[in-house]
Amino acid sequence: MNLSRTDYFKYLFNVYGLRRGTITKSWHDPTVVDLSGIDEEPVTGSYPIDFSQDDVPGLLTDENGVPMIDYASLGIHYNPWFVGHIALGRYTKWKKTKNDSHLDRFRILADWFVKNATASPNGFTWLYHFDWFGHDKPWRSGLSQAHGISTLLRAASIFSDAEYADIGKKAVDEMLSPMDKGGTLFHWPDGTITIEESVKYPPSTVLNGHLFSVIAAWEAGRFFDNDQYLNLAEKGWQFVLNNIDRYDLGYWSCYSLSNNKNVIKDIASPHYHEVHIGLFQVSAAITGNGIFNEHSKKFKYYQNDISCRLRAIWMKRLSKLTA
Image (cartoon, rainbow, N blue to C red; front, side, top):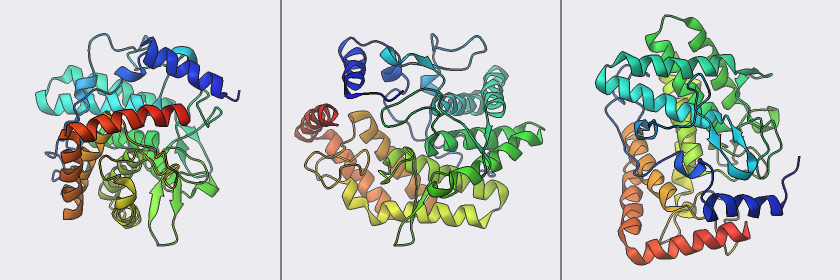
């Protein structure tokens, strides 16, 4: 089914006008950076962004406790990104409290990734089984690959089951395969790479999705002692450094580079602007590159300036209506 612009405006009205569904509640503010696990043994520490605040009572789940999202007019579905989001939050809860109930609930979601991995020519992927704007089902995403990988590698590090690592590695190979060969990676002429959250041409390179995917590649490189993964992660960070001015609007950040040459940029929502601040802090801590810290502080300045914030909110509304 090809979703139309009528479907898009109906979705916007239901979600933002009538406040239906759970999509706007799936990831809460504020963004909490947790750098405590970066220097631990590979993929044994907490995830560098703390998602535990979103694993709350009343979370929409199936009968097994696997999270789902109510997309209002588009129905209730599993979203592999969100399953990983909650899984990593549960892992962080366990690391902080050592309460085994959190570990048990984490394993349920790690097992979901095992059971729902779809074989591909490159390895394993997790598919979205519902239509989305610009994507007909089934479709894939570098972001869901990333969170699935980060979940499975943590499961492999603490449970004596080699299947977690095996599927995790094949998911990395899928994520880091070129888009034209069925993966989610795009090679740029300057030698850098992007891992695309929205896999389509031309690449739009969603900033948060790309950086989460680069983090997953870096974690996999450390876990498997794989220089190829680490090298691609480095090239992924370099892409952001080379294009950081394109993501900086002078008063706010861009969500992606889609329509970046047009008057209406794909401006980030206040939530994702804060996510960019956090991800730049994480990138600085991992790479040691101070440019990420400089822009994290710059984006924080925009966030705290009321005129920048109001301008961003209105431009975001305008960009949704003209998307």
